Amino acid sequence: MAKYIFVTGGVTSSLGKGIIAASLAKLLQSRGIRVTIQKFDPYINVDPGTLNPYEHGECYVTEDGAETDLDLGHYERFLNIPTSQANNVTTGRIYQTVIEKERAGAFLGKTVQVIPHITDEIKRRITLVAQEDMYDIVITEIGGTVGDIESLPYLEALRQLRREVGKDNCVVIHLTLIPYLKAAKELKTKPTQHSVKELLQAGIQPDILVCRTEHHLPKELREKLALFCNVDEKSVIEAIDAETIYDVPLLMLKEKLDKTVLKKLYIKNNNEPDLHHWKEFLGKLKNPTREINIGLVGKYNELQDAYKSIYEAFIHAGAVNECKVNVIPIHSEILENGDVGTKLKDLQGVLVAPGFGERGINGKLEAIRYIREHKVPFFGICLGMQCAVVEFCKNVLGIKNANSTEVDPKTKEPVIDLMPEQKKITLKGGTMRLGSYACKISKNTLSHKAYGKSDISERHRHRYEFNNAYLERIESAGLMATGKNPDSGLVEIVELKDHPFFVGVQYHPELKSTVENPHPLFVAFIKAALVNSELFFSAK
Image 1: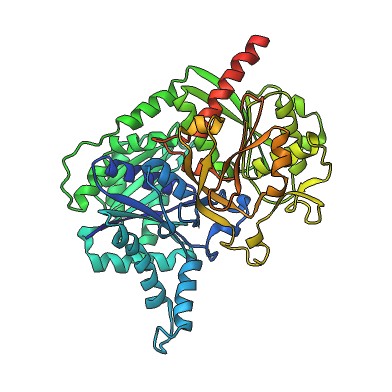
Image 2 (image 1 turned 90 degrees about the horizontal axis):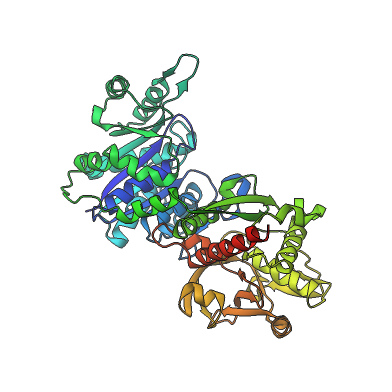
């Protein structure tokens, strides 16, 4: 039978429950234990697919096409195993399932209530992932903060499940904040005490406290927390601010979080954590031999989490190349004011990011034109690739009205168009081309060289596609379709001839980049930028 670990949060949001959960999972995995992580989000949206990136950060897409919380990206990057729809559940999905059952008559005329019907569905979802994939341990991160009204059904389900499976099979880790008051020069435990009190009122006694702090926790403070929060002193874990999220597993190893958890779950495991690949990665990450500047031209630059997976993919690819990658965010709307060259001239490469809608499109087109004409390494993802096609058609083929029907639904030259099967769809949630699709890459291309093979599979999230009616004209002018879906013939990759590195992809390669397997296109892009950097500085 699987055992369960729950990670709750208190005092404030954004403490890093996802990173703590992923770090613990990594330590357990490194001991040979089969572990997975799931996230329960308390909002009413069925999934984050329709949420504005400013509202919730990026929408992470799994292999099976689920639109999920960005924390699932952390899970995959740390564990190097794919997640699925079962790994992310929202209150909206819980209620939707229960209401659909009620409409179908599944409750035999009974009054449907939060307890037991909603809590039963939450418990079913918690245990489902373990039943399907035979994991030894399931870590469940409860979104939000203890005390939020939205979280109450999840805490009640947790209380019930703990009673059903037994305390020996269930551990509750409470992540909390120990603030430092500069005026008093003291760390304060009272917020944590109140947070634990909130949990106790819900009938849950935490087994382990993980304390986020800017300063090391002295022994006396750990003793105080243990006394007033009713945990043993060894279960008070320090989570000091780290230089990078990838330091956290080693910090948790030093604090013996994994050993404490295994002891409380009565799991005998004498294996020492095998983290040599992780340590090699950190060694390269912290000791780069070179440094480059990469421009990230996007629409949501005000919130870094909107492009979280792209930033992390650059970290992975930079470490492989023993290079520090400085990502310079550039808002595409700013580029619409002209003088693009001044803003891009000191960059060794430019990535044009994904996005939706017409805002900032002209800035992306201007950036791509400068990149193409000045031979700057270019990487376009999803909308970035579509913009590259539009720019090429406008400025090389001379199709002045070339456009995407997403930007101009009435355009007479729809070089990027809505997929035929999408034209009848009116619902927005979960209706795009989502999840993993195959792609066949032509040989003797930049992409083939990067991947080292012809047949690949990548994740998608979009409605609009390269219009194959223009394919012959576009290729005859030098923008080649070097990757296509073998079933539909849809263009997945475009590359520009006679350019050091000009690659646009319809899919989202950043979603598959992990610490142990950096994405090959990001690695190749950084290599091209490094070559450009040498040329750039030698010219100066």
